[in-house]
Image 1 (spheres, rainbow, N blue to C red):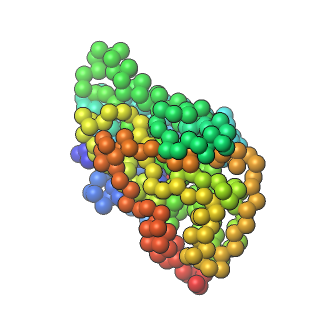
Image 2: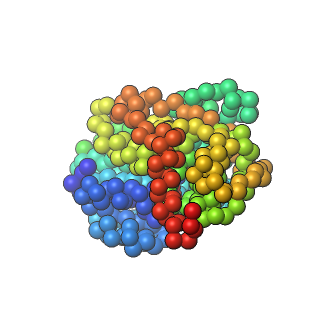
Image 3: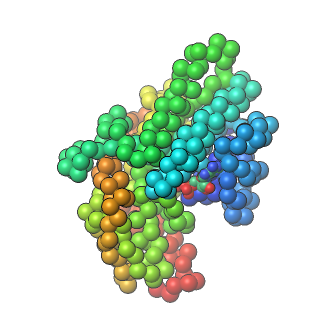
Amino acid sequence: MPTDAVLVTGASGEIGHSLIEALAERGVTIIATDIRPLPPHIARYCSEVLKGDILDPLLHEALLHRRFGQVFHLAAILSSQAEREPERAHQVNVEGTLRLLQTSHRMAKLRGEPIVFLFPSSIAVYGLPSLEAKRCAGRVREDEYLRPMTMYGANKLYCELLGLYYARFYRRLDPDDGAGWLDFRALRFPGLLSAFTLPTGGTSDYAPEMLHAAAQGQPYRCFVRPDTTIPFMAMPDAVRALLLLAEAAPSALQQHVYNVTAFSASAEEIAAETHQLFPNSSITFDPDPRRQAIVDTWPEDLDDSAARRDWGWRPEYPRHRTFQEYLAVNIRRRYQKTYSL
Ligand SMILES: NC(=O)c1ccc[n+]([C@@H]2O[C@H](COP(=O)([O-])OP(=O)(O)OC[C@H]3O[C@@H](n4cnc5c(N)ncnc54)[C@H](O)[C@@H]3O)[C@@H](O)[C@H]2O)c1
């Protein structure tokens, strides 16, 4: 971890909560920013919290007055929400990332040292052309099926390329760059499952939503078909992957963008796991054509062998452990005041 502060954007979000706790455990100085206020139990871990829009030039001016040596750029509008407001999503996801790349590049030049820039990308960058292709594709590699059908997926794929441009080409084009360059690293996450926070605006949200609804004794209508299969990962693995990639030696990295995954499951299998944990759960399936169409283009499984080879990635939470240890214990604890099992 760098001696200078670590900047976390989108700090009020699902990953932000868990990442900030993990960084604080390592004794890292954290500068957090988000358009929404941070809950006090997360803000207390940060040396500074800057509330602001990632598109606001004043926020970027303020950031340049701080010294940060590493960036986790989490601020984004997620897939389902992005389909409702595509232009806004483009602004936040693309222009916001471009501005932060520029600000981080300026900071790297001021410091005269590289800045590691972590970018959480997504399985949404993939676009399988048909359900049949999805079922036959197997474990999809980083360079396959890059034809996203959503604004969010297109935004993420383009930002991976923007990051690469800043890391490689921009550096070559700027002879005064010295040692101050961006070390851009992207992770393509599958759907994430957190016991502590509820997702908003994602298209893999049906899985965490059914669990959290069941834990509160509420019925849940799942917005995809029972056979819908995508890869998933428990939040502790997602945070560990971010930290492992951030800490990897530059010489070990043979690429800028890595898939990571833990296990694949169908919506029906998630419902069955949920029912095992919460036997009174009531889950029905009522597919929403628009959201179903999105998930039908996402791979059933990801090939994360490059991450395993280059920086030692191994999930610690396979399916059984995710449900029986991480989710069962923590979700029950979270709702025990409102719902007696
Ligand atoms: N959760 C998942 O399943 C998942 C999967 C793949 C990738 N990701 C990526 O990981 C990152 C974090 O995801 P998350 O699950 O924590 O999402 P989230 O929606 O919980 O958090 C995103 C945060 O960004 C903030 N934000 C939105 N617009 C902003 C703006 N204009 N200026 C400043 N902040 C703004 C929001 O307030 C929110 O706190 C995102 O880039 C997301 O695309 C998430």
